[in-house]
Image (cartoon, rainbow, N blue to C red; front, side, top):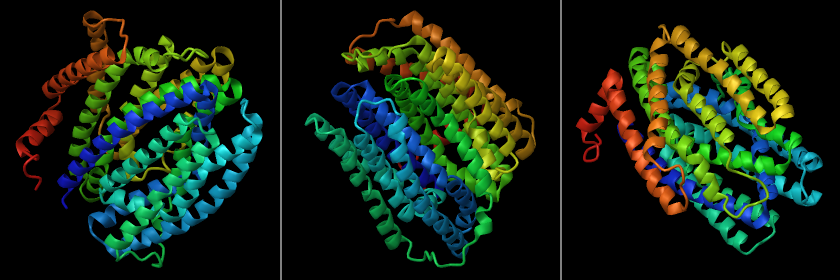
Length: 504
């Protein structure tokens, strides 16, 4: 299967998966809020976010192994692939053991500082059931998922994730409708999640009979895992420290509000990620085999990524508050619709998107050690400002800490990637994002000029949202075609290839 077909399959199944995930992902939290209250919803979101910290045991292995596999996969060197997988397997087994004991400790201590009305044993079991499936996944699935990603077969993982998502959420909907104890709901979800480990293991056994995990492990290939770990810690601080600080400094209702905004932003980011996940393997292989080709591809990728991300977040900026009003209608224990939160969350989302293409360049180049000081500084900025800010202005202070860290690190990533890796000045990247940010601002004025500020009812919301999205994508598309030659070339290539009829 050639790369073009892999990319198309990745995109198609990713779109299908995200559509299902978003629909179910929006329905289930509302059932929790309405059925069990904002506090319980905040508790579950807090646990899920904090469990990611236990993933630090795995952090560094996955990314370093993925980068190590791009070259051997591109050149079809099975012996080298086996050597990397063998080393990865050893580390993942250790990870599973460490994660299990970490989960026990976390389950025992979390109920002590979480401000919840639930009994200690209930919170303990919720934490344990929420994390136990990951232990199994580390033992059986981790190394194989990395191989599939390196080969560009993300659609296989995506399809499996879609099935698991459907089964998990359907089971939650049924149990929540029956008003079953929340602990049992989490237990059933955890059991359903184990299906993916079984499927991946069977798939690899049937399709990759040449894999030999007893091959002498090539630990040097993933020698940068400790430096990758630092980057992963920074990423986790960026993504999850807000919830930890809010859990301790505020109450779980505030965590619920934060989590609802984060949920919406995450769903939009998952749609945008379809691009990066579908093309990343091809970019990674190009970097390892042809750096000049990579420079052309990353420019086209960056302009396309910026176009999609800022288009969608432009619409979200206008619609997020009315969505919160509609979504949380009937929930009176805390206010979810807040203009300041809308602004801060969108700023964070936009800044995160702008750095993604050049961050991939750092990953492909394997410059984890060389960029470790910068990522540590980012982490310190985030934590310090968030801790001070939450004391004075609560949730807003935490978000401002994230924004400050992003402003620093974004500029560092853009400058470092262009100058140190690609050997050029960073102005092209700034120009791409500058043009799209200008269009972003202009669109906000146009929305308020032509669309009603009062959007009530789900039907009206969907109709206006659809119209705005189509118009916004069209405007951004035209501007990018007119301004960026790389974008014009990739658009022309897609249209000319008639890939809907012939992939090869």
